[in-house]
Image (cartoon, rainbow, N blue to C red; front, side, top):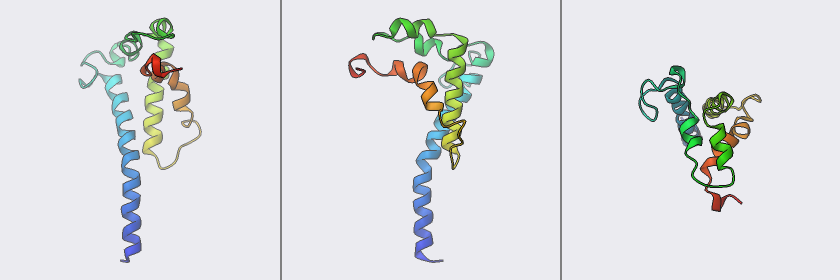
Length: 125
């Protein structure tokens, strides 16, 4: 075995590890929100049990110009679907070696109900 192939495999593993870990984080969040595995979502309060993955997140926005909008979206069926498909799409895309075109826009169409409330108002011009 040559030194070049060892270096290449170490480099490949070093580059793949953060991508795979990021994908696992999003897939774990999807599974936990769907089935209520008891980590961030209490057992029996998963999406499959009738819980809403967006109700707590969007409903707890405390300030900002979009506060009333996010509060009105909290718990809506369409927002739950966009949020969950975003988690699944981002996780699946990160775990794959390439990003298929249908999954590529997942961050863009999930940023409104998912990422918008996470940016504090003073930092969001």
